[in-house]
Image (tube, rainbow, N blue to C red; front, top):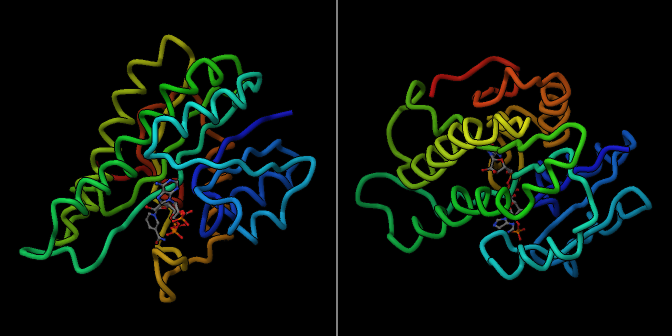
Length: 227
Ligand SMILES: NC(=O)c1ccc[n+]([C@@H]2O[C@H](COP(=O)([O-])OP(=O)(O)OC[C@H]3O[C@@H](n4cnc5c(N)ncnc54)[C@H](OP(=O)(O)O)[C@@H]3O)[C@@H](O)[C@H]2O)c1
């Protein structure tokens, strides 16, 4: 049986990932900040899907989860949790404290989760660390504005690329993905895809990944994106 740990699984794309992987027979460790209020996720609990508390920006929270799951070999660590922050984010419209919170969630946390769960991932069959970024991090597709979100997801892309190099010898594949413009709280109602459609499309790409894909930046269509 394959095991996956998902961050930010209480709503949006993370919830769809959790439900779909469980339906496909995976053992899902679905994490969120406040399980007490994660009603949709809690309703999906089963022998295949357990819900665990995790604030990805709090070291003690990561350590507690690691202790709780110390026996699990993690096939996929899916760093899905993300923070857009208040909009608009153009010139003269950003706030230092907001930038820092975005860095904590979008850039630093996926590295901390990787550090904490590295040995659990190394013990697994698939050995994959999959990070959800955004096309807004792609300098090749830039159109101005969104400074903190672009910078913090761009930081995640840099973390991913360098982890891929550092972890190659340990047989771990690390890659980064744009999930599409998705109708979630973050993406709003006008997005192109539902959360289920986005998760379905990304899971198809995840299933085909090989070690040769480590260090790559993919769109949800499977095409590579310009850094
Ligand atoms: N929707 C889009 O169009 C779009 C486009 C490009 C990229 N993305 C990326 O796709 C991923 C999923 O986004 P989404 O659209 O599903 O967004 P969403 O509905 O806003 O969900 C964000 C998730 O991240 C969690 N989160 C935020 N801060 C956290 C923290 N400190 N600790 C743990 N969890 C935290 C949220 O938990 P709470 O409920 O506790 O806040 C929530 O579960 C994100 O990385 C996002 O940046 C989305």
